[in-house]
Image 1 (cartoon, rainbow, N blue to C red):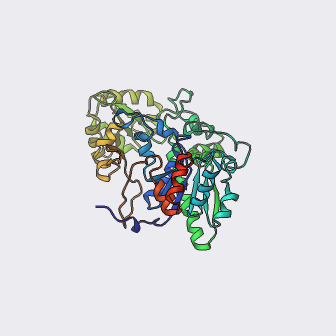
Image 2 (cartoon, helix red, strand yellow; image 1 turned 90 degrees about the vertical axis):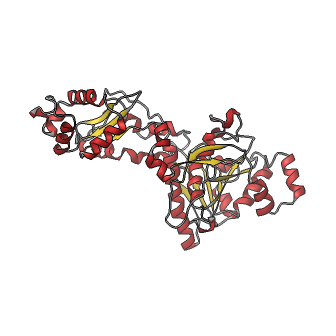
Image 3 (cartoon, rainbow, N blue to C red; image 1 turned 60 degrees about the horizontal axis):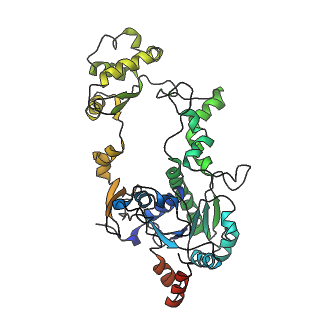
Length: 409
């Protein structure tokens, strides 16, 4: 059973989302989960990259059938406007005048070039909250750089900390900074919206994606500031040498692994007992953290030889019961069948209006007061008639003319 949208926290809030690829969509997705009416402003004249990502529903390559798009744009609607045309930009302003929030993640100057910059928009909506999230902020020497999520892990120092411990960095594989920035950005908008509701004043939020992601290097930054040490790749070793063993170890099966961290001597004795107290594990030198750190490579080799004979889930449960921190290393397939994620509705099956079912993310924002209905990402222009005819009051004849001239496109 779903709860009416009118009971959700952002019911009645309207958002024009000019967001692109992944970060911008997740800002809108988060606000949409909270009840806002979020409208992606897009056009077939320049199709969003996420619409071109496979897999496609039923193998049909079409911008409206990308499952990646349906997941990352969940909660967003769609209005198709060709912003290359002056009348398209004029209609965008008409829509924004009826919105509370504008989202954009272009580089500095792009919105101004479209005559949709902050000064242009606050003239039509004085209490507007505008959220700009360029890579490096709206000012400064790097303001004009263009990035994707993967490059942000390089500009913020994160890539320098990832690797197997031989000193060679290995870039972070997934563009996790995109959804991270999307959720953080939504929080910034909520704060500005609260300020608007209390004071009546809108504001322009200058959100630097790399400054937000840079918070992830906090411990390494503190180590450098306090101790003069510049961290490098440590593999799976504990960054402060406060745990041994501390790593990921093979289990039975194809590419199955378990993560184990021993943070105190009692846990080490419990782990040794779980292994049957083999001679190598009961050596006096391993009784203390200092001794285990000194013999860490041999310790990890011995532990890996033992874990290789066990199922990862079964072994994790056994070690947890003994007081040892352990967890299976889940792959994507594991996520979909894991009992915890299933119980929380982390991934859900939805019916798409085009006639197929698909699995997408459930609502990661959950409230005690209301349930959230998750809709897959939109078809291009699916809300055109509702917005242009209903909200803006355009009559049928003009609407047809706008469609035929590819202004609504």
